[in-house]
Length: 267
Length: 183
Image 1 (cartoon, rainbow over the protein chains, first blue to last red):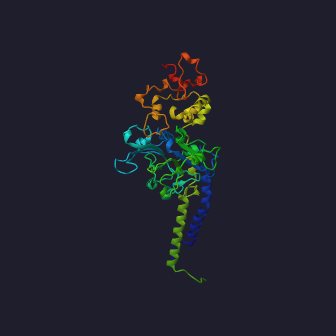
Image 2 (cartoon, helix red, strand yellow):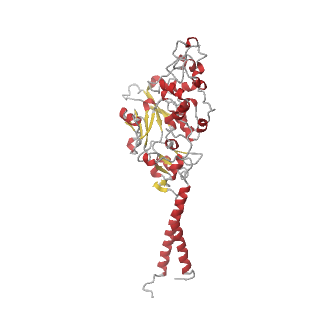
Image 3 (cartoon, rainbow over the protein chains, first blue to last red):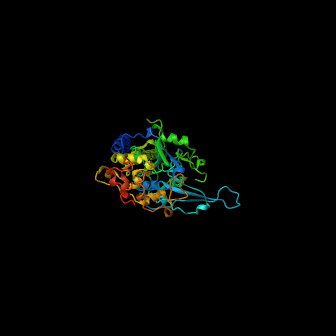
């Protein structure tokens, strides 16, 4: 072997590298202890909770307070296409005369996410077969397609059932936005990262309800913890008293947002 | 002395592969965030970071401690499911701590936001067509905190039961706003 580089120096270099590698885990442990977020609630253990959201379509009155509250609570950009939760209005028209169908054309709209409420007459009343509001949010999929496509591990299923985005780690590639079959994610123009419903993670870890559940005047949204059932648990009552369904069950995403009184037209 | 000597091209290759593997391991250790893989393929610290934001809405529970009588009145009527901040606007943590802070008085637009007749609203929900209704001055006839009651006429105040009368503490609230001017 060519001996222009002395063997001793090579050995010393490699020895140094090895020593450095051995020291790294210790350094990381120290760094981890220093990097505790201040203001976070201390006694919250994500493995001891399992959150669930239930929505009763028949109770939603389309006031838009939830969409409004969500924007305020989570500082979501104001523009009309950034939403973590929003309300859709479904209008199913009467079938055309002689068409031999049960229901006519379906119209779906969500003006400004339903934030300011809905104008009463989009379609004349006599042409409407039926109409209803559907509040939408992240469906908290058990097998979430959005977390599977993330190339950097920035979005993940938290042990407590929330599907979250690590804002400091997201590179803003937008894969998850395309993967979500429910359109629940958007690319924030402020942070340039993907954003979505966090179930108001900073609220639920403090024992508060999510902002949308808090402000809903009709109790169309029921929120609770499956691992810590309370007396007369509203979640159990919801599932027992209603015919419960999920959105797009054929996709196999196993959403954990349960809808009651869901019409087949709702996607 | 040596029984076996690696040919130079092989030992160079071994060294090269060794260097590549080592530099990969070093790079991975340096670039992986501290709490990565604590719980799964993500930064475990992200959970505490996301939980560390300050809540904006104070919530009905916290406000109920501040206005217990109003909450008691509210719980009697059909508006028992409403949250304070839906109509009165956000009360953040700072305002909650400040005893001087007052809640915003809601206006009729907020009544109409929910109660305007709309074919999409469920049938059980009380709705009005404004042009067929008395006026848009809802508070003249309705008390938002107790929608099942009507504000008493000033003259016959004695005849109506005093219990649902809003307590003096409620003056900063919107409920009794319309009552003295009732026609």
